Image 1 (tube, rainbow, N blue to C red):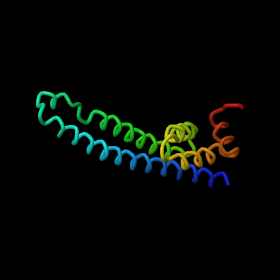
Image 2: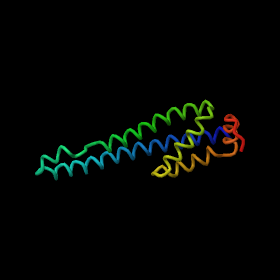
Image 3: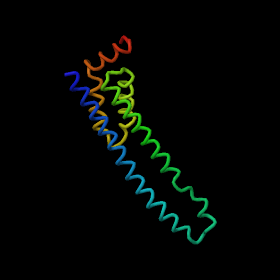
Image 4: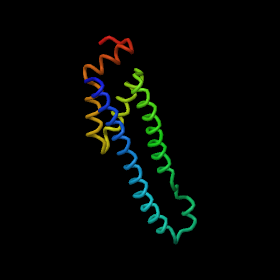
Length: 130
């Protein structure tokens, strides 16, 4: 039972990351089209074209997604090995991704990882008494 809930939590982490990647790709293309239209609008002001920031926002949002993907990769790997820090990392990732389109997967993953059996195992490894 405990292993099944842990597998569900890991599956929810995968789904949350897939949603984050798809959302990042969508934001990139949507922002790029808006950037292109704004750049066309500046055709009559060439001195202002050099001041348009470009892809600074896209770089930051892409780095956020890539950082979250790398962190999730290591968290899932160590969660399968039973490391206690990975349980805290998985809960943190699911909480961070919850205010997005990944809300259902995040909530379901949190319910699975915060189950009494799973929680008691990892809290015992952390030597935390609640």
